[in-house]
Length: 603
Image (cartoon, rainbow, N blue to C red; front, top):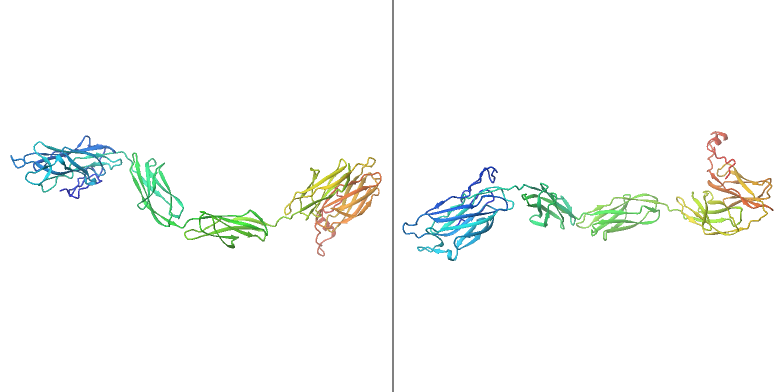
């Protein structure tokens, strides 16, 4: 009977049954390239009155992917029992090749059934006409008698990535009535496997921790960088996805872990071409709650007292939880439930200032918290809504200068006003900050009605505004009237609470008529008669800021009406009275009031 322990082994030695394996070559599994090939045949061996042999057919130096055939024979050396020769009956034969060789085919010189038993070898037993029975017992097998030779050829294929070295083989057979197995577990029919396949190493790179539901890369690096083949990733013994082709020395598998826990991930490289397989040791990945990210969005600016939306976005969009908004580190409102990855809180900023708004996401079960980077919002008081109104000229005369005049309320702190006549811009002037009045000297060339519009450009804290059209009626030029020029000058301190003198010089000096002086749109007293080409009036400057002063000459018989040049005074605040003994009036005028004397201030 065959031994049940007959097995092929991967190392370049062969152990069958209880026989001692034979180590071949200079070392285990190695043979120097210059060494002569090992023996390829067992030579003729005896077993009682029989002979046997096994040999490698053809060359016995093999490369990856080659095929090799082993031929084994059994014959009779002498007659069994003297002159009465009844022959021998072989009940089974078996050949065992080196480990990892793949069985291809076999032939037996007599009719037989052949079975590939893997690591236990290739077994043949007689069948049909190949079986004969012994005359003195019930044994049945292949009959060997006289010149009969039983031949058993077995062909194998060398693996694509074999272990290099010298390897023995086994040939054993059972003979009816023999008490033990014949043949040899180390027959001496050896092969040398040589190849130029390079050794490889595979390393695995994975994150130590990951959130449930997050896709992460599992990356294997294969060295040398030119190695070809595929990498199969594993969770324990379970393959993850399909094998990934190695490119540029790496193979990456994007993978999502859908449950929390600890996973043991490994990677096995299967080579193609002239490379050996290799495997990376397992690494653990701790899968925890779903990782989230939160961002907050707020308007860049807002008006004090207004309500603005504070908006948070949470990813992934299906994350369950709430968002708590905070302004300058203080929670505002109640936590807002996240829906579809978004949460919004409408918040009112009562006071001006710069505020940092944050959003803190608190995840539900299995969902990690996250916090948004603070965003800034600048809150200021809203600008005043202004109204612009054109107030002059109600009437004018073609060819004579007149003032286009407009008021802006509430009075802004600055800005300009642009006047248009019948849709055409005719000039831009500064707005008075003390009276909110703007005036532009303008001459209508022909008689008729004109639409005058004033546009206030706005300034910080005050909105722009446009007046309604104002109808100015322009009378025809009186052909016999003498043109008059009125030059306005102002003398005095440009200080709130102080008085100044407004004087108009009329040219020609003998022009007859009156002058009406104006502070903004406010008439200063009654019209003043022109005497010797002059008219004057004194008025008090009520407010600090820019103050518009104008004058209108109303001509007597034979003289045209006209307007003076506008004068804008920059009125300063009244100075604080000095302490007793602080200094003389002279030092005061040389110091804080120096330069405030209006003197003769023309337009």
